Image (cartoon, rainbow, N blue to C red; front, top):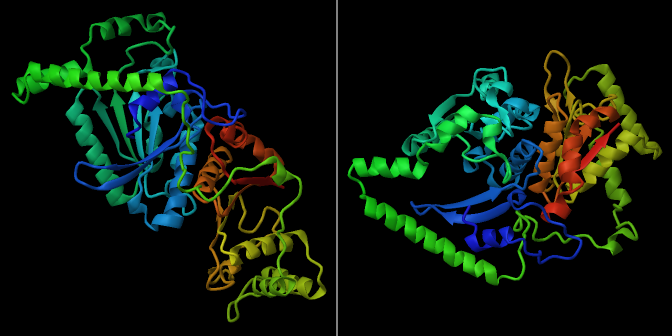
Length: 456
């Protein structure tokens, strides 16, 4: 990512943050980060690392949603971005959110053009032997859901890993499908600083204790191939260690640690809320004459098309509502969207049955009769200058879809992003996203997000 080493060391030193006192922060490996780098070939690449909680795999749909937002609003192409998810072997096999995200890969409302999944397979989850962690043969067998290719690679073979990553990237770019890379390695030390791995896997850790390091293996390979000699290897090592020592000395002189919004550029025009913002509601009114025009536009079915009689009646009733100045809840909701779109704020609505509405109240998408079944989204036919209204019936998922829309809202600070649970109790399935991200992210990571979670 190119994060300066002195900043990393400063975080390890446990310095106070250069923020207001009510910013609590998080453990150092949960923060996000963004940076522009230049590759060895001279290409400029923007890298974004999403902040993540301890809850395993919860960040996966967030990454996908942020990627989709960038595709929709900035890049206009799936070829200009690549989502990368890093999993542990026990988590990729054990956490259901992985399956939910894999099932999104080819859906119109959630696709991102393929994701590269990298599995750090160290054959142990927390302190549990892998034989106790799954029933499937491989930890990556969830990939079979969408027939994704899986590459099982010896992580001790540096050049094989690099070549595999090149193949995985080429596959993703050509076929726009997910691909998994299973890096078969090991964990040298315990689960935490005070853990003894031999408690759980004494035979394995006896072998690991005598196993040469990755650097040693590759250096010996290069020496055997006549590429470098041992002296050169030691020179490179010493040079790197000296650089780290110098950056550590810089870190020792730093007074505070800095934590920036990982999407600082995207959110540069949005300020943080103050107490005064909650003393009164902002002005959100809309000119009544213009509102009436919008109401008629979104309530008038296209001429020359044949709709089922019940659909025609719904829209006929809406036009009468406008004439009588008596709106129901659904009409009020659609008008709210229409005004935002007219003011060039994009709106995304996703969830179960959101196109028609759980109780057939919304009808944001209407279809012609059974002989034709063309789709119309009247909210996208307001004017030439309007922003886009996106509405998608989701897969039957709450956790994954709210995570996706939360990520999408990260990439859409000037828009309205809504996830709708079909019924109130369906919200329970998304509670992890609410707890780990929505309720706590600003305090943990200094991030803002405008996602709206709603249910009926």
